[in-house]
Length: 617
Image 1 (cartoon, helix red, strand yellow):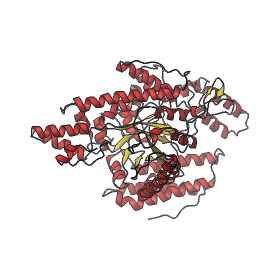
Image 2 (cartoon, helix red, strand yellow):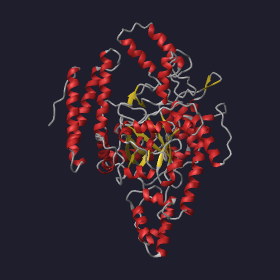
Image 3 (tube, one colour):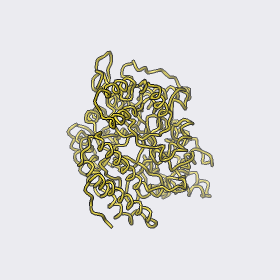
Image 4 (spheres, one colour):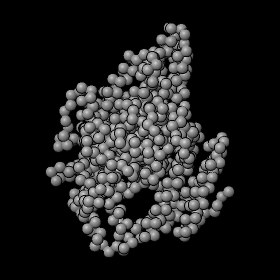
């Protein structure tokens, strides 16, 4: 509730007092890069997301911070009953306790001295009623009035949210004593239960598409429903690829009395981690559809939602609940950030990869910080590394990749697979094993040798098998190596391509200032617009897929390639039409890049005998 002092003194604070004034968040990055980010940034009002994939790492981090904070620690062993869920609950509760102490200190004990935490909080905020009140306070000469302003500011130093992420595709059955456990003990369900049982009042982000069983399991926990005051303690965020996905998943949940509080639109390829490639659908046209239809989306879902609450006998809500549209993926400049907020009217943006170079905000070991600083376009690439069979962004010279190549040279390819978090394959075994594991790669290579592949095909197929890397144990390496948990760790890095535009470490204030346009941290080299970069990535991906197709190594159809090409060209045409709305001036380079990409697409389309669309001016 807005403070009484604001009305009495007309301080003009009309923001939701339960939300920080920042207009960006830090998305989940890998399993370790944001594993403790809330402890670093939440007290400054910055929301961030941690991954719930790796409960081994989560337990290691709980022990580390209990030791750091002088708190008692009692191990939750993997052999303990419901260990995965209990580990997650214990770690999230620890984060909540530590952040609460940080915020209490900032709000109650903090003075507005130049170096104080509360001053740092308000200095980083963008222009807003709270920031303007802070600026007025600094110049106020009346001591009594200044003290009242400071009291208002203390009470509204709202912390960022400690959000969590579950990748819905990582939902594998678990076994004990050779027997498969019930469905609620699958990886994703256990992670959900771990979050649901925590004390957090925050959001859970579901990525990688719909999981009916997991979404149904949400309704087992009261915190996802409104209480008697209409408050939902734990909110739902869906990471979606397009408007249709938002409508389908939102409707599925609304029918179960579950409201989606945010739709997080992410570029399919201009991101870090897994790249969920669409058939050439581009971010701009996707956001355009959200801009035009979001009220229709919210209104239709709310009607379904209210009916479902009544059927379930839950507390109902009279007013339509709020929902947000946010965007993320490849944003690197304040101008791009402002375009998304202004033209597409999104409520906030997500900034991930650039924060890898902010040691105050993310967890990366020293050696790989330097590798990220030095990274070129050749060093950051979409790989076949993921055992899930989904394209995966990788740093070519990471310790994980170097170790993989060393094992191949020594004639012992594959990982020892110490965690088995991506054990999905039953091609050669009854129990699932990981395609990156030593066991799988040995058997697969032996199998391929007798398959009768041509001399041209076999090396390509074998390389595809050997490219699979450990993305659970090695992705945790940035944290376990940095904190001395595992001094032999060989970290993997799954940064997005935008890392190459940042060539030095940054302080938290500097990166926040960069986002809001107060300073620029970009290198002086040429950088295509985020929308252009996405097209470039798609073009490179499609070219490689067509090369595989020409070798008989792709299950794609000619229709797939034709649709992909048509979507790209339609997207380019859309950007041509909207360029005047995007830029007040200096849009010549944007238009030239689009024209060059159009020419390139039509050239290789003709080469591969795809029907070209008519050109546009």
